[in-house]
Image (cartoon, rainbow, N blue to C red; front, side):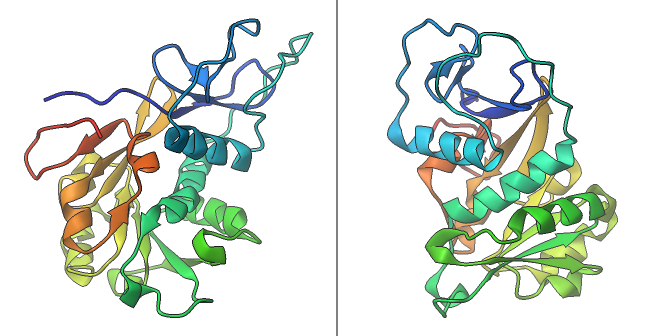
Length: 241
């Protein structure tokens, strides 16, 4: 079992004045720029990985490259983890490919359902407002109160309070092209596809490819390369992308 490299993460707070920092790899370079050594030469990263990192950086209003400030500004306020998870959810919609039958109209919105976590639902509604996803599609946030409300969604986030209802949720979504995301191990082991994890105060994510592929979804390599772990088989084995 081989653990993937920690290619991409978000750190909470920081002293750069930017609030959130994108960190890539063991040297913690930010999309090819080492924020700890302003005079060092840029380090190149694969184009698909750099693009994914830059996209999320800009959506969080970061400057992903450039000269270091002369003076160190005060540390930015620490943002809650649920805001970072909400931003991840929106960015995921740009890197997941659905079957043609799931998005039949050019102007059809991508529906992102949230069940059991009002904080993430509130944050996601704000982040999706006025922004477009792949193909110029809008992202509509559906605040579900029960599993049956999730019918018709393209992506679903299930909060930890819904662990007791996981069987009903998975039954409703069975064989449907719906990307399922959670932030608890109990839900992840019951068949959900992506799990948020907190490593060294950074929100990261793991992906299980077998259930993703089984329902006809595809995740682009830029997103897989930025996951902390990719489970490529139903077994416990981990493989690098």
